[in-house]
Every structure is written in C-alpha cells, then in structure tokens.
Length: 407
Length: 81
Image (cartoon, rainbow over all chains, first blue to last red):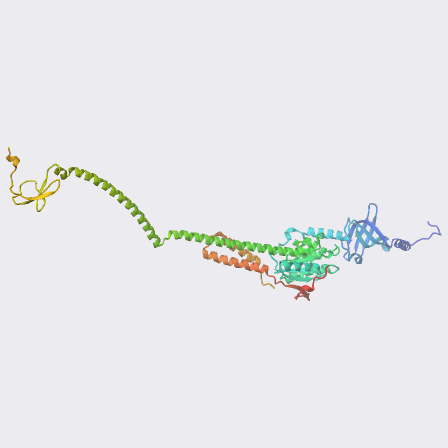
C-alpha cells in the first residue's frame, strides 16, 4: 500500500502529466526510421509506424500535411520525419505527428519521379509497341508550350527557314508552377478534341529539374499517353528526361530538335519525290528509245519503191558488167578459133594451086566454074583466073576429052 | 487552313505510277499518260512541301468553345525562360 504522504494519480492525471512532459519535450523533433504498416485512410490521413532494429514509433500524417507530398509513402521506405510527439489519452498511446517527411538518401522529388516512373512502367505507358508512328509529313502541328517562351521561338524560327509549309497552332500554357501540369495535360486533350493537327509537340526550354517538374506529373504523362494524335516531347535540354518524354511517341532532347525532325522529313520527302521524277523520266526515255529502235528496224523492213528500183538497177549493172566480161571472153575464143580456121583454109586455097600454074575458068556471065565441056559451046565468053590476074576470052571450039582421044 | 492534303496517298499513287511505267509493259499512249500523271503528282507534292505560306495561330478555348487567334510572330518569343 502507498504511504499516506505519497501522491496518488488518477489515470487521467498521470496521462495528462505525461502528455505535458512529452509534448513539451518533443514539440519539434526529427526522427529517422523505416516506414511500416502504412495505411492511407479514406479521410486522407496517413497512419504508419516508424521503426528501426529495436523500437517502433507510431506516426500519423494528417491530410493537410500530406496533400503536397510529391512521393508515395510505402512500407520499407527509409525516411526522416519532422513533427511533434502527441499523446492520445483515450488509448494511452503516443505517436509522432508528422509535418514533413523526406526520403533518406535521395531527394523527395527524385523519389517521386522514380516511384511514378515505376508505376507507369508497370502499366505499360512506355512500351515501344504502344508508340504511334509520326505522320509522313505534319502539315499542321499543335504545340503545347508557353507562347512567350524560348521553345516556341526556336521552333517557329527553324520551321520558317526549313519547312515554311507547316502551319503552327499553339496552345499556350504555363510550363512551370502549380497549375502548369494541369494546363499542359488539358492542352494535349484540347488538341485531341479540336483535331485538325497532325502532330502535337509538347515542349519547354531548358531549366532546373524543379522547373521541368510539371512534365513529370502523372496527369501530363497520362495525357500524352492517351493522345490519339502522335506526340513529340521535347522538354529541357539533353540531361533532362521527363516522364512526358518517356511516354511520347517520339522523344527529342530540345524543342529545336523537334522542329528539325519536321525539316528533315520535308527534305527527305523532296529527295524521294525527285527520285520518282528521275525514274519517271528514265522510264519514258527508255520507252521512246525502244520505240524509235523498233521504228528503225521496221523502216529497214519496209523499203520504198525507189529503194527497190535502185537496188534492181544495181543488180542489173552488176549483171551487165559480168555479161560484157563473158562476151569479151567468148569473142576472144571465137577469134582464136577463126584464125586457126583461116590458117587451115589457106592451106586448102585454090590460089595456092593456081600459083603452081593451074587456072580456073568460069563461064560468064554467071561466073560458073567450068569443070567439063558439057554446056560449053563456041562463042561463050569465059573468064580465066590465074595466080596473078585474069583474062576473058571467047571459046573457039569445044573439044572432047583429049586425054581419051589420045592414045 | 490547308485543305485535305493527302500526301501519303499521293505518294503511294506516285510510287505505283513509277512502278507501272518502269515495268515497260505499257503502250506508248499509256506510258505518256502515266508519265504525265506522275510528273504532275510529284510536282504538286513538292509544291506543297516547298510552300512557305505558313500560318501561326493560337488555339484559344473559352467555355468549351475553340477559336483561333493569329499570332504576331514579331511580338512573341522575346522572353528567355
């Protein structure tokens, strides 16, 4: 039994004293530990425990404190909490009322980024198979950016110089700050609703990772993912990769690079068209060449009457030349034969006989050679041919054969 | 606003013409027709791409209704965020 002098507390009294001591002593504390038994109550309050190897501390983070929390609390997460110890008399429990919470090791923003990235990755928002091809050429692009920013200025300049055929429709939005993410997401949705553009470019010039934060927000990532119109995301500079970049159909490092994609598409299309023209020209030239060759061949086959006449003439000339050659040859042969005959004739000539003293007598006027006396009568004129010269005479008397009469 | 430009279809048509003409199976009359058609298509496509009459407009939305507002190009883009 307690002694008379000793003070006896009621439960409420002692709890009240503990409450005062604890709450005054730990009104502003930093506590490091691992989150476990995390529960998000429908009211928006978070309840969890902080633990280390040997102890456990109940913790609560009310909705007014957690509504701006960028990353997700989850079991196993190492955190540093700032807050105060609170005692809850009805249960005789104390807990840490967390005002601020930071992940240990990496920044809250970085953690939030990683957490959301993992979530979207699991949902398949970055899948290459879900990416839409860009149009062959975007004649009308929608740009989601600040109309007063460097990004749109760069894009307009590059397109003006390199692809002046592209109409640009700008949905001007804030690209940083509280409302930026929802403005960006709505602008993407607006272009999808308004239609009339072939491509949506989501862009912003370079800045710190805090400046670019809006492009890492889930709303923006989902709006990009849900866009029916192909998207190019070009946020910040080389080193910054935002979730918008990762979800978009095409990701380039700068707004200028986005514009260059369009300029390059134009130039390669023009080259392609030039190639087609070249091929068309080559084909038609080949066709004409082929036909003219055919024509030449046909012309050879289809001779004009004049050509045919000339050809015959030529043949005739040739034949007549050959003929005259033949005739000359035949003549020569004949001449030689004639000479041989003449020689032989000379050998048989009566003149040769005459030269030996014989003569030939012919009855005039018919120059009939007289071979016997029959038919010869006195007073007939006769001509006698000698070896040299001739003479006429008159028959004086016809004699019968002297050789017979002479013994 | 550009009227229905279907570059993709035009280029497909053009590719078909180039292929047909290149096959060498056409008569001269058909060839010339395809050639003319092809050259016209190539020229009109190139013409579209080489055009420099672009429009730059702001898409505005008020009470769920959209409107277009011409952007004075000289007046914008002076900030460097």
